[in-house]
Length: 537
Image (cartoon, rainbow, N blue to C red; front, top):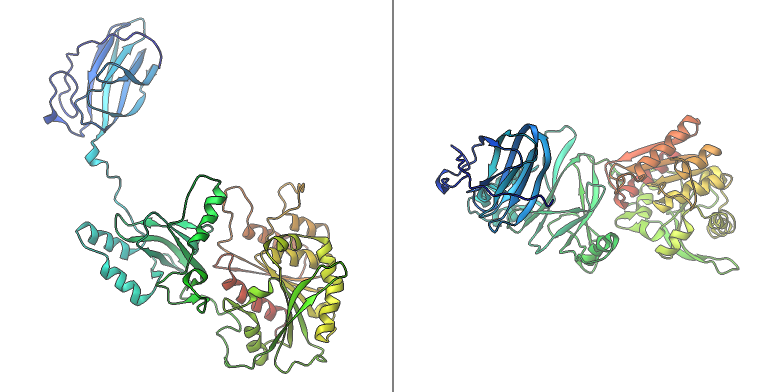
């Protein structure tokens, strides 16, 4: 606010319609019709315009002063300047302001000559009119429910339908190849966050008015397959963005109305998750496209991979029913994150049982390596040359001795998801004489070693650009594996980039994209699809 002197002048101005300014204006002529008035102000003089608008009214005003600069100040009932709105302005500036009881405007001619000023009220909105735009809903059912609530209705019938039909709520979309998926939670006090779902990030749900309905709607591909969970009333507190983000783990749980739980035998809802599939979700080989769901089960036994230095890892060995170590077509699969691929979310041994029994795959044996924990996993799988050499050397010898097989590189395949996918591409590149095949599931190709400056090229792409050995790579990524933070590279982008590099070089690369996210529900089917593409009979 500048310190120029202002001379309050008792106005003789009356506005003939709309919002009234001046001593004779009354509350009866308040309205939202824009109004206009021409003022004549001498050089160095001021004009006060008193508002009769209700407290909290929004005004959009335009002033026209073509020849002399003007100041405009909002002043309260005690004469205290509240806000300088214009300072030495010419032309036709527009202002936006909210007025309170007793407020008035002081217009001052800062020029050396008298000037004519046009004052136009382009829009006024009273507090009662400030409801904002009517809410719009992607879901037709939510649109109807919102109208019912506005008319005094309740939500009991809506929730009864959801309990009967299950959630999320799936409705037709006008967009070809998509449906409307609405994720729903009942009765949170403060907030609800969706973990997973058809999005690149965890989504905050919106409350439907003051009801007990919290929702988030998406247009979802008909081919989608997703796991998800809800975190109601996530604690939010003073701390970093990451601290507040991971706080959802405190309340994360399954959707109580979902008909397709994951980890259904888990001891409580917090250990369970939920699944949704679009009406045209692709068949996952070995899961449901089988003629003999009761195929004989293979055997799983546990062992330890060791080194003299005490670097040890648990490994589970899978061998199919009627395993014959002397068969020449045996395929050896080495799979990272072994325990996660032996759950009902990703039952790889059972899926292999069926595909092998039906003759769609040759005899496949698997070494499922345990990552120990998250910290050790982050050390081993992030392009670690010592770990790569250990696995390709001493540990592969132990694996093959334990299984009684000796396949060549063409019959060995390394596979993994996320960091495991990154390690797969790295180790296959470093040891193509050991692993002639790699299955990369959502590889974390955004990762780069400290100090790497690839001038925009992902580290793994640069590695294969510099030297591309003759390895068959099968890669996949999810449509929802895009960058959470604008400007950051993502799994989807970097996997496509590596695919393009290998394609240009004429290498043997296969690439698939799925309507899913960073999800074992996707990876289980991608893994068996990759095995069929590489070794299928």
